[in-house]
Length: 166
Image (cartoon, rainbow, N blue to C red; front, side, top):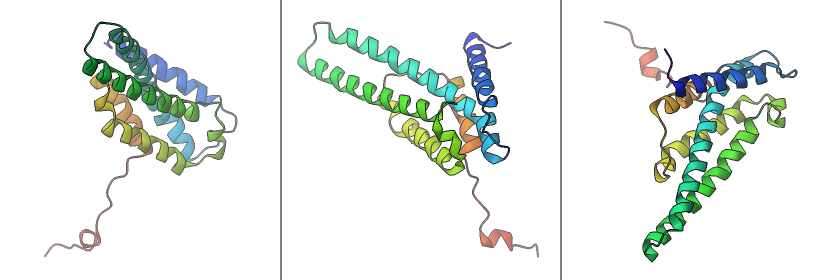
């Protein structure tokens, strides 16, 4: 039985899948597989991340109204700046990947991979500095989409290809 959060992610994923399925210009091929299979996972993740960032911004703004020492206020101000920067980039990614975006007309797998890798870099480098709590299920949602779009297994080296048993 799915928990409430998992049910919401599954429903959201289904909505994104249906939206992409309705795209008339989406030809068959690798790009279509990436968009219909993995991209809904990425957009569900971005939606949860956006909501978490908005919630964090509201909580941080409320804390700045409290009587605080100047160092604490400076720290909250810096945190608010980081949250706002994160919100801007999340919105940029969501607009780029939206089904109505002109981005999809190009069917550019490499460009799609580039955006997904950019999101992965954000998760690895910047997300830890933000007061956004993501569940393991949410991270797994991103990982599922990442594997289908941007993950590359390492190729065997030349020495492994030519190896024969004695």
